[in-house]
Amino acid sequence: MKVLVVGGGGREHTLVWKLSLSPKVEKIYCAPGNAGIAKMADIVDIKDDDIEGLVKFAKEKQIDLTVVGPEVPLVLGITDRFEKEGLKVFGPNKKCAQLEGSKAFAKDFMIRHDIPTAKYKEYDDVKQAIDDIGVFGFPMVIKADGLAAGKGVIIAQDEQEALEALNMIMEERKFGEAGSKVVIEEFLEGIEASILCFVDGETIVPMVSAQDYKKAFDGDKGPNTGGMGTYSPSCIYDKDIKEKVEKEILKPLIKGLKDDGLDYKGVIFIGLMIKDGQPKVLEFNVRFGDPETQVVLTRLETDLVEIVESILDKKLKAQEIKWSDKKSVCVVLASGGYPEKYENGKIIEGLEKVEDCIIFHAGTKLQDDNIVTNGGRVLGVVAVKDTMKEAREAAYKNVDKINFDGKQYRKDIGKVAL
Image (cartoon, rainbow, N blue to C red; front, side, top):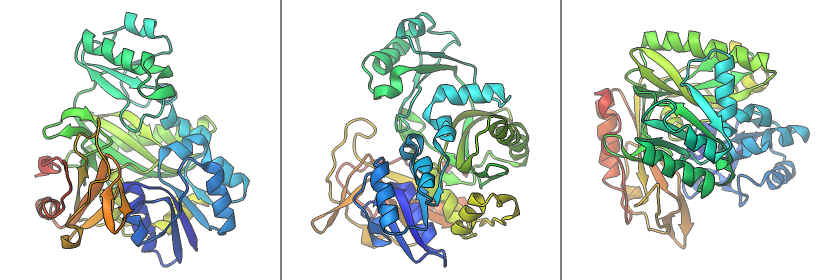
């Protein structure tokens, strides 16, 4: 079959890599792709939010399956548009994608369906939001309602920081229309974990756990990023937590989707905060997480195409899914200054020296004969080993071999699991 992967980051490189291992796949296209993906798939110069361009391409090339990586095309309704043309596509429809596209929609869904989460209030008037500063005490969580590339969440430590955050989001519109409404939440303490699940509208099946590092610097310091690294399995996601998540979160989630008439087919990402053995939901994402995908799919032993087909046919319940017992670590190499200002076009050296690891490209492109930086998060260095210690050692050994001007990364990815 011919497959089209939509997107051009580290998650999409991982998806292309995993799909390429399927005996069912003859050819892969990726739009817009990156320098690493170019070695395994035909790169298509169409942006991931150009829905009409993607539909036209899929029809022309007679694509058998389209797998959507990022959230933006899903929120824009790429699935509805493809299905209207009779094209097979993997990813939730526009209605379901509101679970990520609107924080307020997601919080309302959780409260109505008794899914444990933080208390919240929503505001579309900045003056009302300012009047309510400290409504749940401090620190105070302020979220832009819409999509903000993983950066629209600010944890204000005091009233001054909260005022600055509200002004930046709602008045200055740093995140554009995403900031026309904000959600204010109580601050949850604990340890974060991530669970990705396959969903076919009837059944929800969790994947292996992962732990993401959102802060830019070691020791969870600095601003929020799209994710500076991950490891799998999460050291805190034990049998008791797993059972609680399935009973208190996954069961009400699938029931809630059905009750609300949301025919959800695809992947759902659940960000969790765990304290004293009690998991609460921080957020939903309506696609594979990035960089969680890099550590989760490298542990998947079942053909991903088979799983995708079982979901589209609503036969997920009967699909066997096997996972490796090995441990995986992903260290993200980012541009200097990320997630704030950074420069592109820095030559990446040392990729040919990497061994015993998989390198997933995120923000890269080909320029003349060089691979250069082309984004905030540049590469994901992934090692899969029998123990977490071995996986960390292999990943960081290869991190040292790769260089570009301004390279920054965290040195503590997976350390907690030791």
